[in-house]
Image (cartoon, rainbow, N blue to C red; front, side):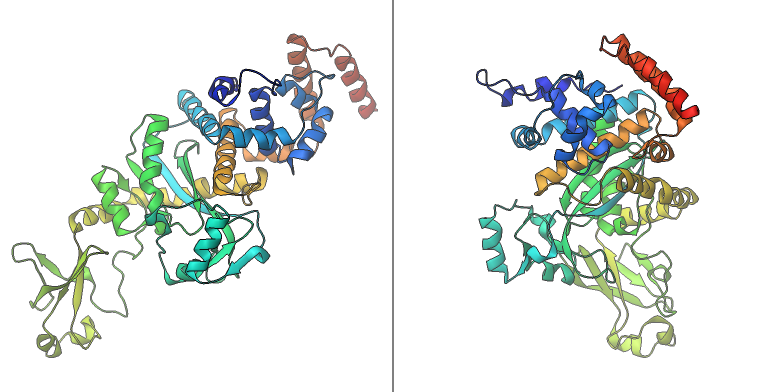
Length: 459
């Protein structure tokens, strides 16, 4: 169902016209596909087991007498090709799913997951920012954009003083306040279509990059891969930032994610922003007792303005105890794109959005769980960011092909890695051997061997 022959033309420019003939790029791409699809421990193990697996030999186009390639050609091929070939493989699987009717394209789910780098915590060194910069330069760490390296919290400021000498591209981050010590990690971002759970867009970043910063790139990637414009985007509270809401509304996308501050939240029973009325004519807020809050403080980085009441008026207000505990008076923050924010929050409160967030629990989290349980998703096989991108593209392609072939997680569990049940073997293996025989392979004795084996087991 999947055509891998496009690899020859895609990487032809990386080979010369003389010298030793290389292994067919199609075979190398299929071997890397098998590495994740079969969840083999290593490339050495993959090549060692290759002569023992007739289905792998058939998939690669090898006969029983063909010699398996050396495992080192796989790492050399990745270094020669780069990541474009694997990205194209993933995009082709998305397009095949679109043609098969498995993708709707108008409603998508978005989430990110940390991936442990192939580096231990013992490889992490701590120093000042200047020393860390010199270490990263000495190890050739990949530079990141300024907006990605900008730490979202004080905790990440501390992590910027740590670097792994084994994999300097992976910053040290923890999974949460109660998750223990930080370690080198990457972050995988993916977008999943609502209809059948097909992965339509992926991105790989350092572990300290915020999830909300990848919304716009993934939306653009999804629309390019599927040819459909997104109408609704579903995410968890980590995506419910003001910037995300405003940007999605500007693009005509309905944000179906929870805001980082729940709507109608009351802090210690005090009045919320909803209790204040905004007067657009005079650019002031009017409090519940009719007093005016005027703009006083402007925050360029947050793109917000604080509207503050007069201190003396607040001190004499009869509702002061229900409004504020501040000695300087009550203030209300207004974003510079408040109109778009209010529209986005209105969409997030709709029953449809709440239903989508409930569906996301099993659709999005199930996609991650399937990858972690069957395709070695939670730990990097290789080091450096560009190799981790290759791993994420291959895993996403494998999961899409499983959807394309109608394979569910339960069926994968039943058929790998242990031997399939006897009824499945009896139903599938004769068709498998007949298909190989039709392609001209030398397996004349296999049907008789199968019959004798089944008879022996039955006896």
